[in-house]
Length: 275
Length: 262
Image 1 (cartoon, chains in turn brown, green):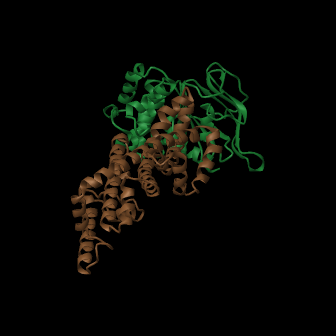
Image 2 (cartoon, each protein chain N blue to C red):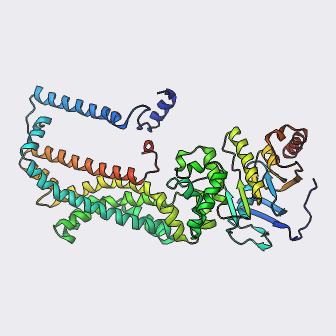
């Protein structure tokens, strides 16, 4: 607690004070956010009942919770396809993104030809390509997985490239002085250096993969949480829509949490306050 | 204390010879001359310092001796052979030790061995001994971010010594440390060097540090870097911190300061 306040305020202004203060555990830090969340829920609940807002416009949090409990098997059965397609799309994005990043960071062709093309290609709103994918790859899971991949791979590439190419100049010199081969340098220095960057990319990428799958389900699907949202929309069942969104958010949170946890385990050398 | 700029003869004792070594960066009118016609012989097991203001091309000179930067003109020999690329017999210490954060201190020290593709196990004892000499053996299994700046630099020096170099190049290794740690490190460096002599090329912009450590101090000019003076430091060894308060030391320091201000 003896840390000078000035420094803390400065860090907060720099947007870097997400780290817990001294003497404060991560858990008690998270309690603040959770408290605010609960407060918002209470306001929401109160507003809905006080102004007698009809269910069809805005169901209250307890309505949603009750709906979820009442029809849990429905939501669980629609959760699985969305979850699996997200994971597949994400896995492809990570694998493809790493391969592309290595090509970009290590080869002249990649740096000069592939990278500019990738950047320009990001101007295309990838979601707009979804109907085309349905045409090319059919209405099955494959299309949705591929759309998720397409939406999610770019942050992996960008982050991994910046990790592979931001090795300290002196370490590069050390590598030039001693490394027997380019491969040794890549394996011993560049690749581990890029791992934290890769995980940062994965955190962005997983969220995008979910968006990809949901949009694909909007376009054409007979199951999945995205389908459920559209279905609820067609029947003016706002409770169903919002409950599906809640389940979707919980899924996203869980996936993000798994990645963050995995990152903390793998990137054991990084100060947790930096993350 | 004689100026030594006679044309070069490759004597057997010259560990490193520089002949008309120049380096400029860039081309045409925008070219920057970093180092200008350096002629110098460095003897075997000599501790030699390059002293000069920031940006006088000291670091460039060091990288050229290391074989990591090619001179624009002139030639460098080490042990009678022309330098055309990096050599395993050269160890390098940078201002910032830049240890790899995911490796333990010991694994960082062994990094050059791993990069060379040699058997790491056969160097492990030697690496531990180096850590022991530097007083950080207890931290062998710690990660770099658990160490203080001084300890990290000690590890950086161990890393430079691990492959039994005959030549040690040090580029302002202690300039990022506080004054007290710096004195400690200087003493320790001398202790290691006196125990296990090798040729050391030390780069610094601290006059006291250069005089305290070296057999010879090469005073360099502002850019483009030229040799202003080549001063032999005939102070007795082993040297202790108190040496810095002696008349002899103070006079040397005054003389060098005058040269630099000139």
